[in-house]
Image (cartoon, rainbow, N blue to C red; front, side):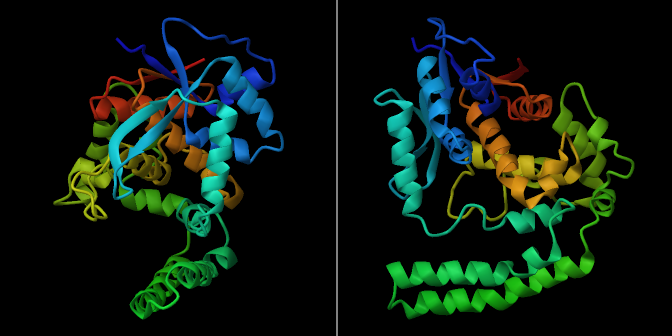
Length: 303
């Protein structure tokens, strides 16, 4: 019988790396980490010390399983055939081959959460067009149909961005329009948190289900027959940011969006584990609300 998996948030790994927490491997369960940790480690000036910390506690890499079509299968695989340093090197090599930056939409995400700036948002369509041009030039230089499709999308995207700028980004107005008039959603606690939130906002969304609203069953499934739970959790965290449930001000700052993205990624990967441990009380509350709503056996605790 396999041992229970305990997922450690990056802030726990940081305490081990800085010798603020003396953590050792346990026979009863397995400590795990994910490539989301690598994303955070990459942003550090001293990546090796975090990799050494993972090695010290004998943590294993838990990664999303990909199908032959490079779509997420909805399962995760435990990798025990390499060290954190080896896997991190492979991660760096893999992302170096991808031209489209994972932070390209950060100005948009910051704006809809009530922050960011107009200049960064207004330049977003051109930034995306430039990156798509580079990808087309490298992989499909003679694909005129691909070029035409990309060019046809540009005006619509620019129009959407201009509309966002015209409406402004007053997050309080946005939340009020969703039903969160006096910050009542941020104060929700207890059991069935997501159902409680849905009770507050659902009158604005006739014909939409709770799963659809929170991103667990999107209308556009992007080729998936069943939307993977990991993607559903990431989407749900974005909705929670906008609604103001356990949201932090960092989701309004462009340079902090990668941290926000990592938080949702950690909660998503924690869905494949027995326990998530973190120093972040907001992350733990979100994780438990999501896991309970989806009927998962996972849970989260604050160290």
